[in-house]
Image (tube, rainbow over all chains, first blue to last red; front, side):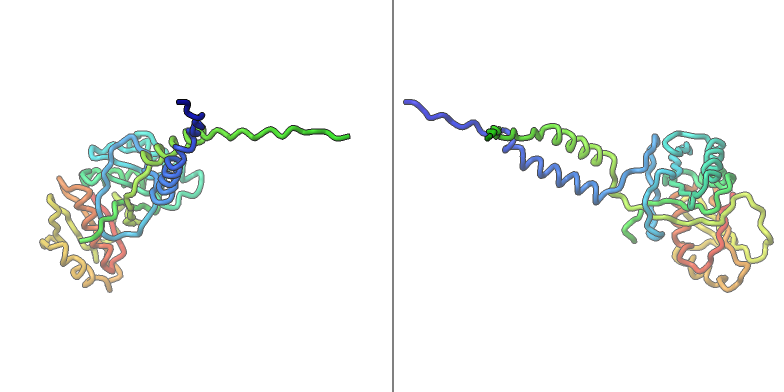
Length: 135
Length: 128
C-alpha cells in the first residue's frame, strides 16, 4: 500500500503559541516590575508602614549589614562616598539623596553614613525602606 | 513590449532570531526586576554632628537595644509616642533628637521614624 505524500508540517507553526506566551511574559515583566537597584552588596531593606512611595533610582546609596557602602555600582569607603556625592552635587541637580540601609545595620553605623553623606553638602536625605502591608 | 516579471513566492521570514532575542530579554527582565514596593522616609535637614542652637525645646529620644525607647529619660511605648510628641507640637522650638544607642539596628530606627512621621513635629535631628 502506498501512502500519499504527507505534507511536512512547518515547524514554525508549532512554536507560535510558545512565542505568544513568551511575548506576554516579557510585556508583563516590563510593565509590572521595576528594576532592582544594582549593587554588589546583599541588602535587605528595613520595613516601614508609612512613607511616600518611591521608585528606586540608580543613584541610591546602599549600605549592607556590615556597613559596606555601595554607590553607583561600586563599593566605596565613606570618604570616597563624600567625594563622589560632592562631584554629583557640583554637576548639578541631585534633588534628593536616597540611602537604602540593610535592616540589620547597627544604628550608629547608619549615622556614620548619614554624616558622610551630609558632609558632601547634600541637603535632602531620605531613607529608603520596603513598604510593609501594615500592622 | 510585454515583460513578464516572474512572481516568485515570497519566502517566509525566519522567526528564529526574533525568538532568541525575545527569550534573552525575558530572562534579563525576570532576573533584574523586583516586585518590592519601596517607600521613602525623609530625614531632611538632619545634620548629624551639627551643634544644637539651644537645649530648650529639645526632645531627646533614645532608642535602646531591642527597639525600646525613652523620651527625655522616661521609658515609653512606641504606641504612646505620637501623643507624647504632639503635646509639644505648639512649641516652635520643639525638635526631636533621635539617638540610637549601642546594638540597635536600622529596623529599630525605622520603626521609630515611622511613628515620629505621624506626629506634628517636623524638626528632626539624628544624633550620635
